[in-house]
Length: 97
Image 1 (tube, rainbow, N blue to C red):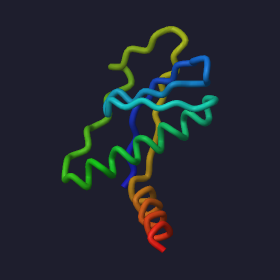
Image 2 (cartoon, rainbow, N blue to C red):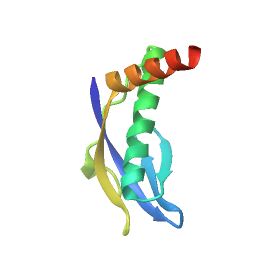
Image 3 (tube, rainbow, N blue to C red):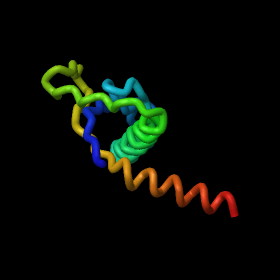
Image 4 (tube, rainbow, N blue to C red):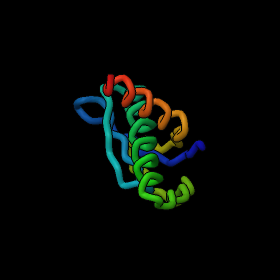
C-alpha cells in the first residue's frame, strides 16, 4: 500500500524542516533531499504504527487547502507502507540474531 501526503518544507539553519500537516509530525534533514527522505521515513513509520493499532489512515488534504508561507515549499511525498514494514521486519530479525 502506498500513500501520498502533502509536506511543508522550511529552511532552517541546520537544513530543512519537514512538517506533515495531516499526520501532525515533524522531521528534518541537512538539506532538502535529506528532509524529503526523512519525511518519507516519518510518514511510513507513522502509518505502520497506526495500522498496527487498527486505526484508519487519514485522507490526504488537497494542496490547495494548505497555507504555504513565503519561503516554504509545499509538495507531495509518497511512502510505500508495505515496503517499510518489510524493512522493519528484516531489521528486527537481524537484531534478534
